[in-house]
Image (cartoon, rainbow, N blue to C red):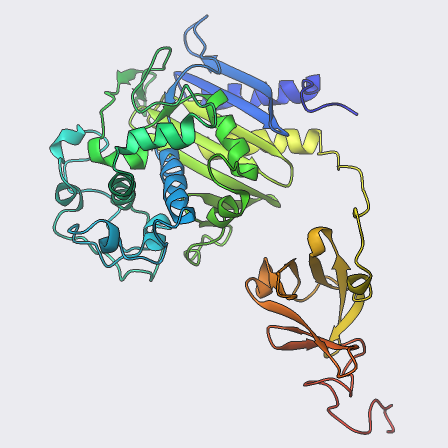
Length: 460
């Protein structure tokens, strides 16, 4: 068995290099840097450049655009976890006078607040932030494009409002709060609001000729929380490890998991992806990726994590367009996961077994549908349909002797053990659904005992 720190197999390494070399050549990108992480450790990095001997490495900064939004979302979730705000709060409660105060923090995080996609003219990515010195300059006169909560509509100004919220609640600038609360604890010392050498320069490539045009790097001012940051492949893989499992120094695993849940239903035609809270989630070739893509004039960036494979990839390029950056990063994950699939951890029994809970395991029936209840760690339960068709869920134990659903149809619902007068178990109640030891058990509540004559054959 290989350790995660060991290098990938030669064939895998060549496949990764071939993919990034093809992306750089076909995308006509001045330079491209990429890296792959497995089980929390970098196992490959590579780069290509149009200048011989000057290829970027894992310490070269590129601008990461909207990946910045994920960092801003983490800061907001930290405030929530500290009890300083609630995601259902209207913005006005904490940041009055914006003109968009009726929208909730949850809606802003998930781009369902109905705000415009961009600021008022001129184009904010191309012009200095000093042209928009106040939030009113960012939002303009037409603030609402859609009723709040009605649909997903990506909004860069929405994340400007969230950055201003963080600054107002913390009493310090967004940049300072980000550095102190996220970047320093995660060891991301090469992630900064402004470029620090060594860094790539931004370029535009002519669409019909092999010619370059330099792109200016503007300071975005109030729009910084939507796309300001510069980073490296090494730093972004540190952030990927955090997104995979959480880090109590920054944000607990449960809150990171919350970021990955759908904030609104997907748009028509986007059934293989959705937006969580500052995170994009896509389903591709049977694999789920969480992360974010980003772009600003002169730069493209992508970070994807496949939790089930424990593999992450980052790709950074210094061109305005030309490379399907999200596809390339996902392909790097696919290459590693398929060529060198994750080796499962050894099975181990529970440290201790509760006899009373053990007696609950095994088959249970909802009407005629067979399910199996499993006992897992920390007094948790899993209820799964026998044939794989139907509703299943994991449940976490509560102190009051009930369990709460963690996923699927029963997420948030309560599982209770209903007992007879003598203390024996009559049935399980899961959000009012009755699960019995026998199909339609006549001794149980609805739907038990539907016919006194019981089961019968065709002639019965």
